[in-house]
Length: 202
Image: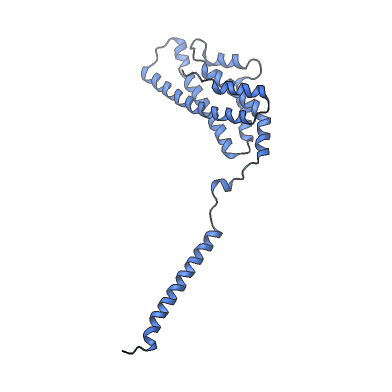
């Protein structure tokens, strides 16, 4: 049986063209991946240096700690006869009032060189404020001696405790961060004491 050159020409051309097409497609995809590889969120946002983090801690660690004290004085106060306003007044009479402590904390949060940490600090502030608002919402009625609606009261307690749990979790993370970068032994002990002290739940 004889085969002419034309019998092989078409299959060889098909194979060759297919091979070239596959090689070109592979090359194109590899180069496209190198040129247009999307940056992850961590790559899009420049990461702060260790020096920037340490500088932030040196400047703001006392302000953050003081905010913890003021906030937790309010969260711990659940006596309806006294109310949160008096608790905040007692806690802040010697240095800051609650508004000043919150304002300075927010300035510290906004100044953090890490976007992730800024978000955490602001979220922690929001959860603490939410817990305080849930706590104070029942104060006027209780002060008047008005019986609370059991269903509403149960919802308020659940909302308060949920906000408080989120706040406490973030607070413990941040107290540990402050303690790790602290250079003052006495301040480190204060942070450790705060870290070990549970927050009262209404």
